[in-house]
Length: 382
Image 1 (cartoon, rainbow, N blue to C red):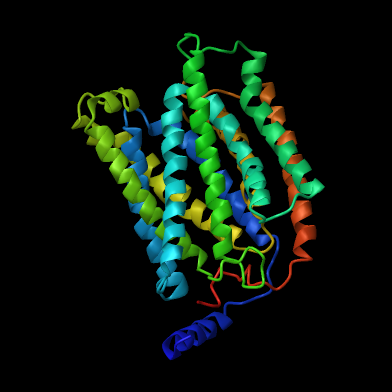
Image 2: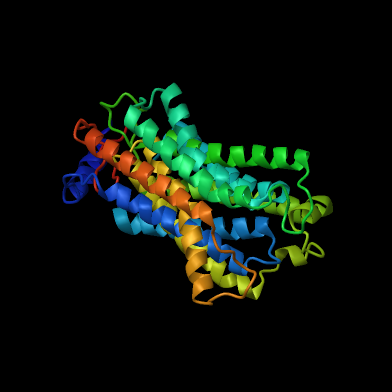
């Protein structure tokens, strides 16, 4: 190690010494609950103001504004940049950015093939996918409490999302037309890619946060906030390419945005979409992904637990819809009241309780591996 690198490491350690504190195992779980509550509210807010808006343009604007904001927050939090990163770390960050791009792009495209119920039903599958990936790459084991909690929360979320159609007439869209089987299959494949990409982001970002004594260590640690900021930069670049391609290809534009009359209309931001877009940039992108990435950097949260709280999204959306309709805060017909499917929330809460119980027991046996400093700060560089 050169003298310069040694001085940088020593200086970094001195700056971090005042930030280190005994880890509060419950704090990452609070951050995750808060994050997925914001995502659940975001789905309702999106329904209220996203009419006649090119979804790919929306996704691009969301990422292009969120990236710099995340970088500014990281700079003020750590009082330094990401530092000199090896080429292999840039490659991992590029892959994480690709995961963010895939999870957002295929969610939007999937909605054009299948209904929103299918989209919501897939989201709680993320912890199951991440648990399987993490197990096969040797990142975590399978405990019975964690598996039980994830399956219970998943079952509750599935009942919450699909229960209404089970009690009522199913198999049709809002306009009464029968859903085409081919489109439904394609849409569900896209939702699978969406959920798999989210799981891959969480699983493959984890090694950037663990210490050298951990089996998952790749010999290099990064600040959690810089990880998400740089990954968002790569995602925004990819989304710009997708946006330019879609907006300049009439066939793709007509397929993705049926409300766009021409390529000029495809770049228009409706006035009623400004507030929802602002919410999605500041809340659903900046706050949510900062919290998720920070929680993933903590020792008390493994990758499947991080995404297990996604089961809260449909529950929060149902509660928000109920309150807005009950107090007559939205025009009639925009949102719908939940039915007996709301009972799925019981399974979600029980499952999350079991997950938190398992995490609290696991946190007591975590070794001092460098994971879980209060701000997810790095302690060593190569």
